[in-house]
Image (tube, rainbow, N blue to C red; front, side):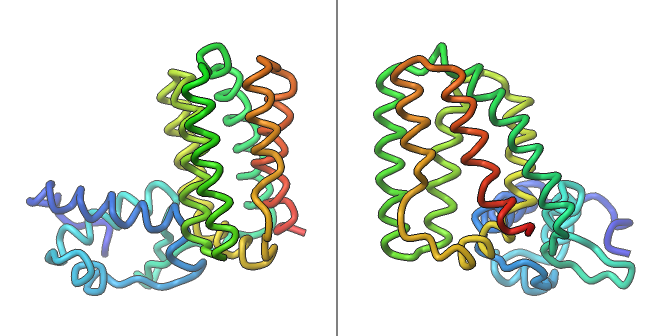
Length: 215
């Protein structure tokens, strides 16, 4: 069985495959329900089967991949209930991160987030779903790093990871033509030091689209 193999003797290769595949999943580069093979992963990253197997094992444990009883590895296809659950988690965790970050949100950070948001807008114009997801997560991560709550941020990233393929599907369904309105509200609340406004803007931003997908 895939999960009963011996530890990876090449941790550097395993970690490179893990991080590379994790990033691809988080940014929506792999569609929901897409099957992956150890041979294919090994070929893509130029490694043997063992590092590929160890990377897959870690990603299954994080909920980024599923492993069936027959040994089939795939990205998850989330049920509506699961989407609702993850949307609720995003709301709880990210609103708290934003609130903790607010006292440390200096103008240099706000300017950097505005620059990232300009990239988000460019990706919308280009209809680049992967670029959009990458820039959108960068926008949020830049703020949340100021919270100085690494365990909470790690939890948020695990949720992003599980949602990556679904976010790609959501982008395709919405056919978004404008950058997120709530990003402008987040930036305005940061400039004003408006914690209630910031909490509301973050909550709306991280849940509205997902809940639309779950309908």
